[in-house]
Length: 207
Image 1 (cartoon, helix red, strand yellow):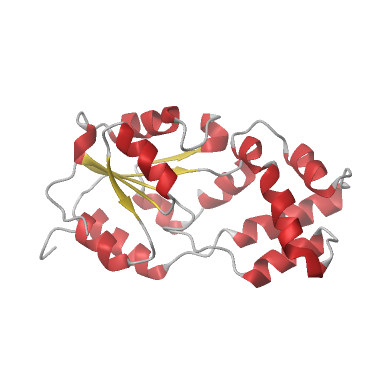
Image 2 (tube, one colour):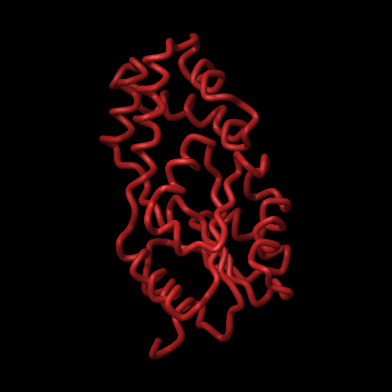
């Protein structure tokens, strides 16, 4: 467990840390919207992820991405329904994590969000109340680069205003993203769903 020995800032992932992973029912809802066979959810997920990185990086429009997933061009109404169902999958947050972040924010710790997210989801996340705790929110679609590319972390580190990367903690649920951050000198916490670890890292003892 990482103990707080003095941080100048923290860089936080969204999905898997602040945001809860989508449930099976959410995946099924999206698959049904896409008219995908319900008995082939794994196949839908494979196709969904196959083009997701360039979509998250802002290289594909909503229409182009969903055309690749569906194998045909969706009409305007279907595209709106797909975007709504896709967004709904990623917008449930973990109240336990938010409670820790509120406590950390109250100590004056600067927090920067760094998320791999497409443009439409980024716009929605910016409307949520917890977003106000973030001094900056950086999304891959706007940066045009995804984690674990070094440039993503460099943008986030610059946004913290910190001079020493070793006094900045990067929190992510993916080990590969943490490894990449560590190579750039950042402290890391591979978050595995234990809010107590996050609290120990961010909130001074007695804070």
